Image (cartoon, rainbow, N blue to C red):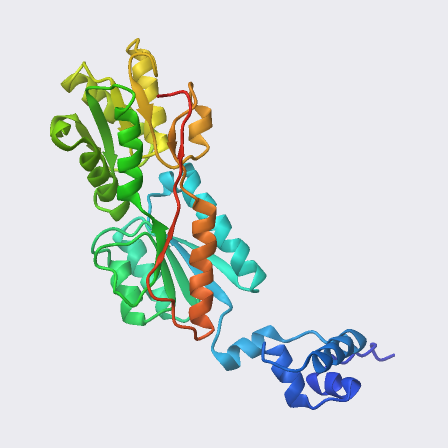
Length: 339
């Protein structure tokens, strides 16, 4: 007895016949083109009737599209898991890509070897576009993206970013200046900063904003430079600052995770916040509500940043030119009990 034959897969021809509409019109609907509302309704009803399922793999092969967008996080592996901002940016981007039927491919770049591997991957046509987070000044990935002319959006603005590549972010200078001025307005006289990631625009800009807020009161001895926006760097930076100047009565930490580490050192030293020292952070991440007391900080709309970054990539994939200028999102101050 012969095995039962598999049911024949419905085709575009079947949809066209059932709808009483030309195959070309059906193809326009399937590829996102314009048709009349009546024709679209007839085609959608016919698709349901014949059980047509688009062969996405074949269509992508013809169009030379992967239906995938790379999410490149240029961070150490440990920080990637510990930083709630990167996770929120990633989730926001994925929301938009998912609605557009695109897969997000996560790529972590933590070494020169990673850079070479990811550059080969991007060159191979495995993704249609890319979102890049935490690029440093003169990062090789920035050059690779420009050379490939890959539709891309950067989160943040490396100084060597080509003007044709859009970016989305926040005003780090203005935000850092605003929260430092508010801290100074509480009467603090010796205000210090834990400054992180000065090889990125975000870190350098936050230090610029801090310095601008203090003006003539700025003391370079009261700036502790650390490499990363993480808890351990906050511990290290705060210890350095107390050793340099025990009279510190105000602190701006360039991230909430840094501020949380600093608060631990202050508790161990028998100093209270905000009684002995006012402490403010940056991000309004989950760290801000885990500290005791809860942290005054700058709200960074990380999820919305991710959504905007994904939207800019999709616009490029549709053949649209990015709008003049770039996307900077608002960053209100959230004042809590730490200062």
